[in-house]
Amino acid sequence: MTNVTRIITSQAPVVWKNLNGLICVHKPSERSVKSVRKIIAERICNELNELEVRPPTTHVSIVGDTTKELDVQVKPSFADHPAVVGPRYIPEELYISTGNFLGYHTSGVLVLGLQNLGAKKAKFLRNSSLLRTYQLKGKLGVATANFFMDGKVLFRGRYDYITRDAVDKVAATMEALHRKVIFDLCSVDPRSQTAYDWASQGLLRPFKTKSPVIYGIKCVDYSPPEFTVEVQCTNETEEFLIELISKLAAKLRTAAACVQIKCIRFSHFDIDDALLKKHWSLQHFLDSVLDGDTKYQKIRDTISPTLVNFQSEETST
Image 1 (cartoon, rainbow, N blue to C red):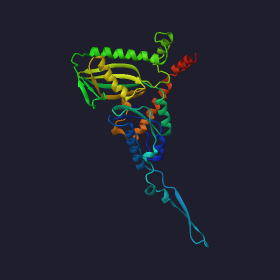
Image 2 (cartoon, helix red, strand yellow):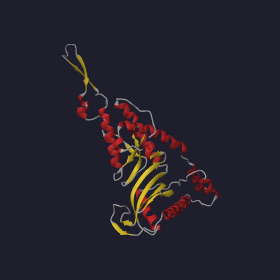
Image 3 (cartoon, rainbow, N blue to C red):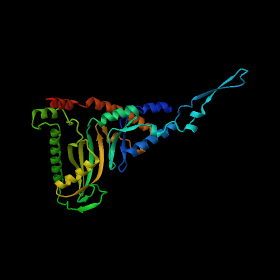
Image 4 (spheres, helix red, strand yellow):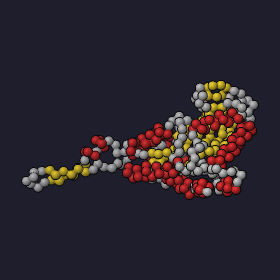
């Protein structure tokens, strides 16, 4: 994680105020995003309650004989005491939203928004079709009912004839096919001048589509029967990524099941920025908020609305 200035204070209200932005955590596999948010909320609130929390409100009472001078007493209100009303900070009151969604089997970079400001930033990230990078590990020679290794094995096949070059060629073919799909989604001929003008300005993000789009796919490790491909995409789902391994194997005339899915990058958020579970603590979250704000600003500065404008002009003509 980038070195940032630490916020050191023992005042829980001050810390709560600064916990308002984006954080980047490493989501473990075989765990839902909902459970991750629950754990984070519990840890934040538990540590906040150990700091100097807001004192109970005061209770003013007037006592004494009404025929004489009355005595005004100011005491802490028992109706607002933590022993009566419970802890000052509870997980249910900490709103946490997602900037990118990871499936149950997927591990890696997960960006979350804390409180109102974080929720607004997370919504912007969700709606911006930002580039994600995944590493998918597959196992050749086995086909399962759900395309993942935990599914029921349907059949086994040969893979001894498959080489690294063959995997590279199939990956390149799939990438070229999906690049053509990008222009099709934009209703533009990939051989036209408009397509060239758009492509020269950077990655194309199809206008208002939720269809998965692959920008790059390459083999980064081949140790048969296992292999790993790196995929750059947007609008993907876990099911799409899992089936991608099976489709790649089918083009190699064999079968394969997905073993592992890992998100290593989400726009400017890298795997090195993601907090491991052992670092899910108040101070690390404060550091992550500061780092997340910096990366969010970079995303706002670099994201291009050109394609949206082009698509609007194309539609209106």
